[in-house]
Length: 353
Image 1 (cartoon, rainbow, N blue to C red):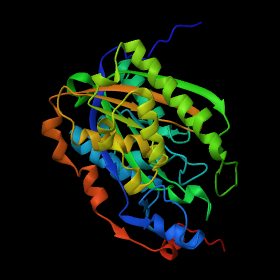
Image 2 (cartoon, one colour; image 1 turned 90 degrees about the vertical axis):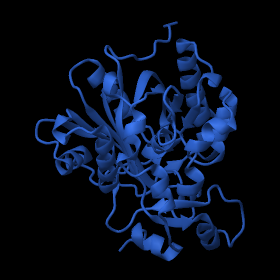
Image 3 (cartoon, helix red, strand yellow; image 1 turned 135 degrees about the horizontal axis):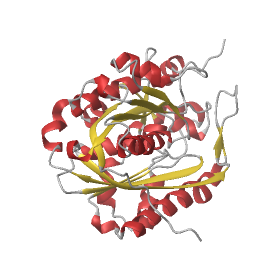
């Protein structure tokens, strides 16, 4: 059997700047239950973030990227890559990465493109950026996870499919506010969630999305990285897991040996829903907003199809001076306007002409 070897960059790399963006509109889960279940049944979240008529994955990614650049304190033209991970890109054929790079002012001397791996597309872009910067081929790379997820009307996914995103500028460790010690990915072909070409809404395998998909991949990726680095859950101040609902991340944390207080600061799904490619990453931004120098953070994403990326970070002294250069994630969560199901249908274009 091939020994497990985590990915480590040739030169130390870390997060130089980070940022999040969450749309202001909120649809209470009670509204969905009122329409489709006559007010009966349990609710997986309190409410979810809904993009406005002028918002999409591009605008969300752009706002998060601007916040990340503000914290990094570098010029857009210093970026050598702009990569956007999402499963709801605005165009089927036209990269979101070029749109973001152009709007930031990072073009034309830059790599740009899109990543897809369901909800772990954002961490997939981060691992690629880690390799680019860690190899010495570039000093700075921007990795983004953003989505405007949709669920079929009346489906269980409609309660949680939300919008939001997070962006991270990766650069040399000496400039970093959090150093990435190592990553490890665990991937199999597991048909738990899919959407074919020209289909408007995704399909899912009901309970199959849990045990053989979410829990299997997260636990294998997490345990492999912890073992390879000779670390235990108690060595971390915080842990962040992909958040399709409120129960799954709490259950997987318990399976791995993490305590509720370690995951609570990054557990945002009850208040904003599942932001898909931004799920674990938006949670990470919320943790970075409060983490102290010297503290370790454990992150594990999950993408249907299926796979997980696990990552270990250590916060540095630099975080104190940069934290307030951009809005905190909690600022976006607190800035909310409640809408009803009718406005939600209009904003999300659920009525086909």
